[in-house]
Structure formats: C-alpha cells, structure tokens
Image (cartoon, rainbow, N blue to C red; front, side, top):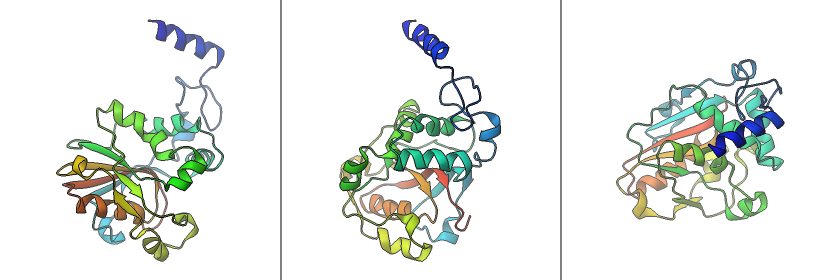
Length: 221
C-alpha cells in the first residue's frame, strides 16, 4: 500500500516519459508506440549460416537501430545507468517470441575484470538480471573472461571469432552441469561471442544453451 502511494507521488512529481522522444507514457521505463515500432523486431539467428554450432538457438529481441542504439551507447559508454530500465522494459513490451519453457538458469556474457572495474557494472546484468528474477529464473555468473579482448564492433566479421577464442572459462561448473541455460548479452551481431561462451558451457556439462540478446546487428540476418 505504501509502495503504491510512493509510486503515485513519484509519477506526480516526475511524470513517466518515453526515454527517446520524452512524450508521456503510462509507466516509467516504457516507450511510446512511435519510438517502439522501428526497434521491436524479434527474430531468430540462422545458426547454420553463421556457423554457430555450439548454440541450440539464438534469439534477438530488437534491432540495433534508432532509440535502442542511442540508449545502449549511453549505458555502455557514458555511464548513464538510468537507460538500463528502459532497455529492460523492451524484454516485456510484447508477450511474444521469448520461449522460456525449459530454461533452468540464466548466465550473462561477462566483462573482463579490468573493463568491469573501469565501467563499474556489466550492462548485460543491469538489463537482464531483474527481468530473469521476475521470470523465476536463477541468475548465475557462471562464466569469467580470462583475458581482455578488443571490442567486437571494431573488428570485421572474420576477425571476431579469433578475438574471443579461448577468452572464457567456467567459474561454477557444478551449477550448470545437466542444465538448460539461457545465455544473455546486450548485443549480438555475428554471434561469435555467444557461440564461444556456449562452447565453454557445454564443455562444462550444460545440456543445452539458448542465447538471448536485447539487440542485434545486421551481419547475415
């Protein structure tokens, strides 16, 4: 009851607005229909066409364009953690396409400790963790990045597999053994990073690895 009153007061003082165009919306974090329309375009990646053999599926929620691109840039490179709530809202904007049946644990793609210390957070965790808990899915930091890698966006597709090869290890193998894992990341383009993570998870005994990214680029869609 008190929380409802507090939320109503906050809405009165700070009316909820679309994070992109600032037009009024129903709740904080929500997008207006005009800004949502060009980005919410969920699709499956073609695993065979991209040579992503370690994955059982890879789903992208949005296109990496317009407001999604802007907010992710603010979150990753400008320290604007407020953008995370509006990006997380996109995961539940429509009840379609996520297909979580059978998933037993959610594992994020990790940052290298040096980059995590520099940024102060893992943007993937800020976007996905609360959402996963609301789905009743345990969150597990099962992977670690064992060496720094060049940002994937700086590389052409042919270089990306080499960049992440051998860059991940298991931190908690006992926790994923025999489990169906949902591997989450903020952006997928070629899929090289999530595929490399899936290799490590499966070598550690994961029964299946499905990937979910908030946004996807246009390499081989």
